[in-house]
Image 1 (cartoon, helix red, strand yellow):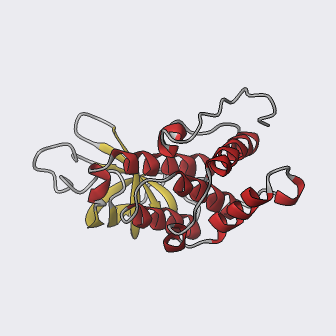
Image 2: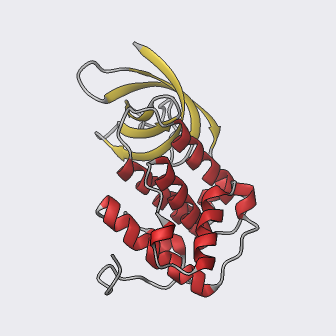
Image 3: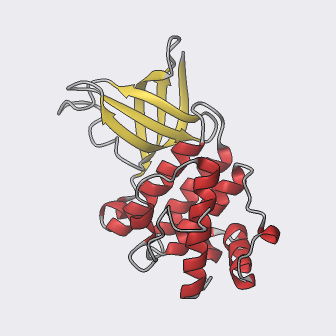
Amino acid sequence: MVETATGLILRTRPLTETSLIVQWLTKDLGRVATVAKAARRPQSPFRGKLDLFYLADFSFSRSRRSELHTLREVNPLDTHKFLREELAHLQQAAYCAALLEQTTETETPLGCVFELLNGLLGHLAKQPAQPRTIFAFELKLLSELGLDPDLESDSLAQDTKELIKALKASSWPELATLKATNSQVKELSRFLTGFLIFHLGKIPKGRAAALGPGVPNIRVNEPGLL
């Protein structure tokens, strides 16, 4: 059975000397894993079409025995070229993709999550890498997962609580206008680190790099973190 979808490539890895496993995030099918047979050969029709965060229309044959399906055709729509030109942007996109993979199940419709990651990539293309981008993504994803922080029962400063509300509610274009003090950034980083670890068990690698050198490094074993 051949199916079609539009998706973002979250991850690729070799399967054999000539084939690749391609992990997709789609709006209607959720996360889907496909095998691109012979994709690593020089004359492959997939050559130049499969890379991280490519947005593409694709078709695949669904396997009856596993969740690894056979990729048929790929039509790239947006390569997000800017990610290959700015390391900070790539680090932010990679961390957000890893967090998304950790918190979602395969082949479960994730329309809002797809739009969230697609919106993030559009935002990164227009703005310098900022810690607020990561904070906003984390808060928006937590909201989609039903894990909104209860700010009324927390001892955060009132201005930090207001910042959290704004980050969660703002569209990506609106996010660019938000400002935060150094103390707010430090408090918010500490709060979200503890919240993510408490509810998810761990945080994907790459968060410190995604936040950037201007954000204090919060150690997991700091007193009072959780």
